[in-house]
Length: 115
Length: 115
Image (cartoon, rainbow over all chains, first blue to last red; front, side):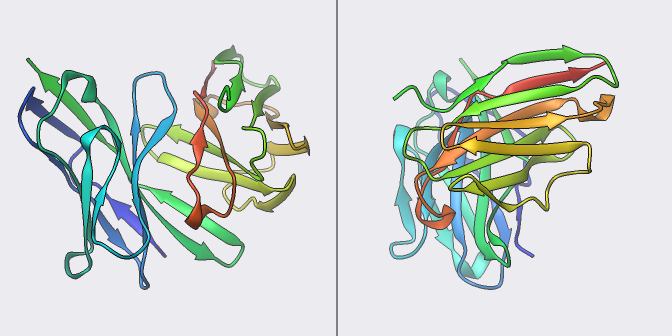
């Protein structure tokens, strides 16, 4: 079955520094991959998604992610972090199941941004 | 559009009581999802509907949980009787089409505390 692993539970970066959040997936076929962000007390918002084509995907708020099939990874990056980026980030994999579609989320990575 | 609307935002109840969570999806969206988020298990899909019909309820934890979608603009998730281990944040999401082609839009969630 498809699954997602986010190895880092918490990450702290300084404002202005670069960011990379790791995501590894397990799935036999080509996966559909997503990154969502959850601000405190809010629902999840889609940052970007990968279905096929160019392996470098651009999203909202200056985020990008790169699909690497050989490493089963879909890491999220941002060149310069802003204090407003402090939030919980979730990687998810979507795949067809017997009963339709399933979206499996990782446990999330909590990002803290320091001045 | 107002986005996905959930009510109540917070619910505190005592063990054994019935709890009803409500969701209004984005108009025109044919898919509706219910998720549960806990620290231990992360974000789990409970059930999803397509055109008001339940498609996959394999994530519903047990018979105490039930979900309905009487029309395209309203869905409920009911827990009867509630137990302390049901304490979690429950999210409703909607999508205009099948998961792998369309973004899911999340509501702000209902934080449920069962004492």
